Image 1 (cartoon, helix red, strand yellow):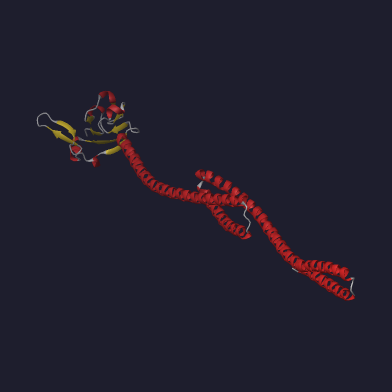
Image 2 (cartoon, helix red, strand yellow):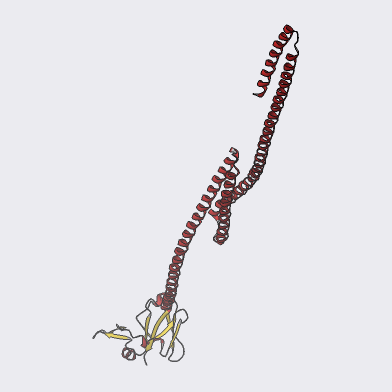
Length: 339
């Protein structure tokens, strides 16, 4: 505005000067006109200089304001750049932590797979160690969950959006969740196997108890069988004989006499073993009786080829058994002798 006014003043001054010059020329350069023109020029020059100085001052003031504004904007930009650098450093550190955690989880994943593979054939003695390992892995997974949550918060607070970093964290979370699920399934499988093992052990104990009872019964049966066998053996090898006159043997209830006209002698129907002597037929094969050989009579009669009766001195005889199997088909024998 001042600059335009100054230019107008110069134009007006020039026009006025021209008019005055024309008048002076016409009037012959009158003295009074020269003074007026001189003052007008002075005033015009002073006014022009004042306008120029004001214009320069105004321009300098505007430039100072612009410089101050630019300085403030520069400080804001530098502060923003510093904050951005700090955030980038934090994000870089976070990326390294995520990478390390991802590596730890992958190692843990391999360990879990090894445990899951070996659990199918794990011996009972290793069950405690396996459960301890699973507990340690669960603790590590719990720590990784907290670390992952912390990393996610730091990434959000950093204000920096990096797609690859977000994808890495998402994959880490998926892998961590997968491992947690796998450890849970592994513990469940071990608990089921332990339950099956306890059931099997209880069944085995019951079976062992049953077997012990059966074994006892078998031992008892075996003892009874042995006793029976021995009894049978003794019975088979045991025979009974009695020696005496007919009257003595009848009185001792060893033999019975039947018939009136034609009498016959047999072993008593109700044998009383107390009237006999017990012998082992595998050891005793000869019997000495006080009687002549011709007066010896064996009741019941035996096969003549199974024994002989031989004299053995005055009024003594010996019954020799030559075929024990035939002779002892009847285990009781009465030898009648004449007094």
